[in-house]
Structures are given as C-alpha cells and as structure tokens.
Image (cartoon, rainbow, N blue to C red; front, side, top):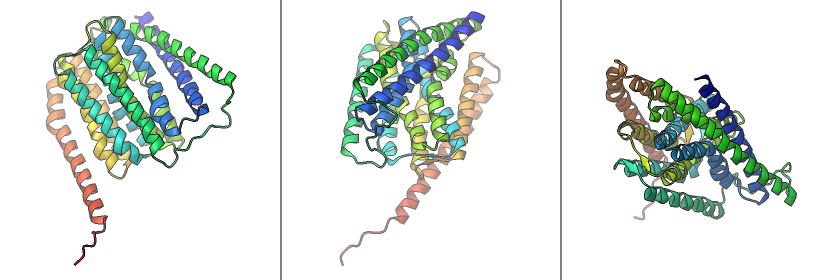
Amino acid sequence: MLNAVFLLIVGGIVLVLGAEILVRNASKLAATFGISSLVIGLTVVAFGTSAPELAVSTRAALLGNPTIALGNVVGSNVFNILFILGISALITPLTVSVQLIRWDVPLMVASSVLVYLMALNGVIGREEGLVLLVLLVAYNGFVIRRARNESLPGDSIVVPDEVPNSTRARLLMLALILVGLALLVAGSTWFIEGAIFIALAWGVSEVVVGLTLVAGGTSLPEVATSIVASLRGERDMAVGNIVGSNIFNLLAVLSVGAMVSPIGMPIPASSLLFDLPVMVVAAVACLPIFFTGALVSRWEGGVFLAYYVAFIVYLLLDATQSPYLLNYRTTLFVFVVPLTALTLFVIAYREWKSRRSSTPPANHPA
C-alpha cells in the first residue's frame, strides 16, 4: 500500500511538472510565431493544462481500464466547474468575456450533452471517438478563424520582450516541450498504477477512483493556473482555462481513450444514471450564472463549491454502501437540486427582464 501511495504522489508531482514545462514552452513558442493571446489562451494553455487527463486516460485505456479513463474525464469536468471556478470566484469575482458566453460556453454545454447521448447505448465506440476528434479539429479551426475575423480588446498579438525569437531558442522550446511530454507519460504511468492498486486494496470501484482521486490529481494544473490567474487579476483567463479544458477533455481525452481501447469506452450504469448527468447539469448551470452580469460572484462560487462537496459525499456514501445514502439522495434530489434550479431560473429571468426594460424602444413612424 505504501508503494502505491508513493507512486501516486510521485506520479502526480511529475504530471504537474511535465504539464508546467509543456504549457510554458508551448505558450512561448506560439508567441514567437505571432499567434494571438486569445488563441493561446483557448488552445495552448487550456489544452496544455488538460495534458495530464489525456496522458492518464490514454494509459488507463491501453492497460484495459477504460472506466478509469471515463471517470477521469467526467470527474475532471465536474471538478473544474464546481471546485476550481468556486475557489477562484471566492478569491475574487470572475469576469466572463462576451465571446466565452456567446460561443465557448454553449459549445461546452453542447459537447457535454453530445457525450451523454453517445453513452446512452452503454459504450462510446471507436467510431464515436473519431467523431469527437473531428469536432475538436473543427473547434480549433473555429477559434483560429474567429480570432482572425474579430478585433477583440486584449487580443493583440504580443511577443514578450523576455521571449527570445531566434531559431536556436525555438529549438530549445521544442526540446523542452518534448521533455514535458515525456514527464507526462512517466507521471501518468506511475499515477494510474498507484490509483488502481489503491482501488483494489480498498474495494472501491475504478469509476469512483477516476471520479475523485484521479480527476483531482490530473486537474492540478487547472487549479494552479486558475488560482494564480485570479490572484494576478487575470480573471478572464481563469474562466477561459476551465471552459477550454472541459471542451478538450470531452472532445480529445474521451475520444482518444475510446479509440485506443480494444473494447471502446464502456459506460457503467452508475455513470449513466448519476455521474454523466451531474457533468451535464454543471455545464448547463454555467449559462445563467455567466449570463447574469457576465460575472461569477463570490456567493455563486460558494454555491459551486458546496455542490462539489455534496457530489463527493454522495460518491463516498455510494461506494461504501452507507445506510445514510437513501436519505442523502432524497434530500439532494427532492429539495436541493430543484431549489437551486428554480433560483438559477429566477436570476436569469430577472436579468433578461432588466436588459429588456433598459433597451430603448424603437421609434416607429406614425
């Protein structure tokens, strides 16, 4: 058991280190080629911080544990929205850009719903994985095209003075990117081996381990990036990192896991009935919260965080077959969830009504 814990901790550290090296040098390399800050934020940074999820899920699928890969994706997306956004908003209210509200958040919601629909037959096969991968390529093309067509505030092409622009410097950045990838592979191998051993030793299902331990561990780069961005006042980056990472998890991590696994991505009944719906609901909840004032306030961050705690408590009660599970489930689904949904609806309706009343009526000719 101690060896498994050691592998888990060391693997997690190596994962985060590899992701940091990869993201930092990929961002610098992109900047030297004059790629805009918007594209870097929504692709290089967001996708780079999701590299641990990709490495762990791919490794798990290759080792014949695709349910860990599924739990990792679902758990990471729930963790990103409820925990990371919650913590970041508690530190300081988060500004949400109009472009994220108009395009990227709806795309995140649509991707979540699509994955759930694909999972209804009990497995996400290789063909469906290929469809998700094609959608990822289309999304990247859309982001690049949008960046070229729209003149956005803060979207200027900037090459920082401290970033060298020579061929030798670019080759060094490329070499460091490869080092980061190698660390990701090594770290993911140790991390997943430790997680599987602990799951077997405790008698906990691989899905629960993926939803909690693995998801939290592989989301550490997102935690660090979003919290640091909040502390530095770069609030839009904190939100964009989460939205972009969630899209990448659904369209890239899940698709690769389904394609490399000989049996595709089996969907346990528990995931279909609870875990995947929670992921979809968490994504949908972003719409009214982001829409109202284009801001995630502290109290909304607190609500997100409280729901993540409730989610983890439910998983632990279910995994241990606790006698309190039935009462907890009843309270959660009969009272808490409907009241929250009603609150979000009222907030969104008031915001819509306020915007409508503030819009001056058009002058019609007599």
